[in-house]
Amino acid sequence: MTAETGAERNQSSFAGYVRFLETASPEVVAERIPRGPDTAALTAHYPELGRVEVHDVTVDGAGRMPARLYREPGHATGSALVWAHGGAFVGGDLDMPEANWVGLTLASRGVPVLSVEYRKCLRGVHFPAPSDDLLTAWSWAVEHAGELQAESAGLHLGGASAGGNLAAGVTKRLRDGAGPLPASLLLVYAVLHARLPPASADLRAKTEAGQDLFPTADMAPEINLNFTGTTAALADPYAFPANGDVAGQPPVYVLNSDADFLRASGEAYAAQLAAASVPVRVEFEPGSRHGHLNEPFTVAGERSLDRMTAWLAAAAA
Image (cartoon, rainbow, N blue to C red; front, side, top):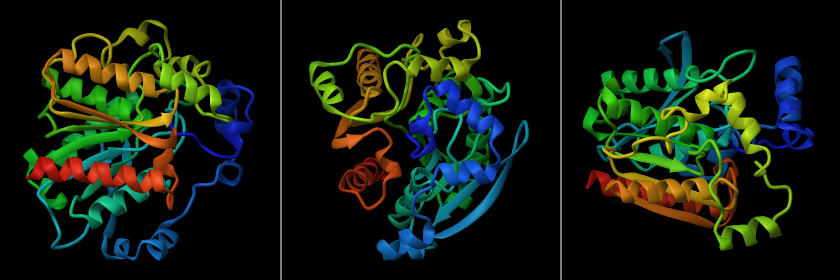
């Protein structure tokens, strides 16, 4: 559910934003929703990113879905990450910093990344379509682990916001027989519950003090129902991973934003995992808002990438 700038915050409702995406031309969408710094700007600010090779690949599933492979030749730790960006299940792409900056940075630190696209929940598309796409991308990564400079056992799965939801749901599908489990699961400001759990006192204070927060607590039900398409599907354990049994999963790293209504979901899911004896680490990034991986050159974004790097490095040790 990563916050977009510009048009998204100007819409009076999430339904209005969806109508905008469905009816506006690609040129208007691009004009109203800036993507943030591109690769040239990122490498100018972080010169080490220039060593990373970037290759566009296509993953064949229900359709031909684009993906992007990031790797630095000769620099690999044994871990690699399959990563899904956010965008409230309706937006986002491989060029946004939450996809591109993450891929470049982790690859420059020895963790190749397969950044994946998925079908958006627009024009009648709903769950399980985006989940199926991520599952297909995961299977592709397992079959092509050598291209990620890793063994299949060293592959991790993760995502931010809506992408975190999809990664967690796919992990439960893998646990239930859809394929090999990832070495670990990384969930960054993800939405795991169809209905947000109660916020802690600290979170309430920070969201009450915040301005122009996205998504709002009132908007979350709209986003979630647009994702599933039906109220019945809101109870699906793969659509919202907090539903049902959460046991039997690999180690999970939960990284939340600070002043973010979705932080309640991440914290509650971490508690569910711990109660089910799943190894879990949960943190929040002080001073951050939802979508902070989409904000390069900020302390919060840089620090979160350091945290993700440390988690993946520890897994490879």
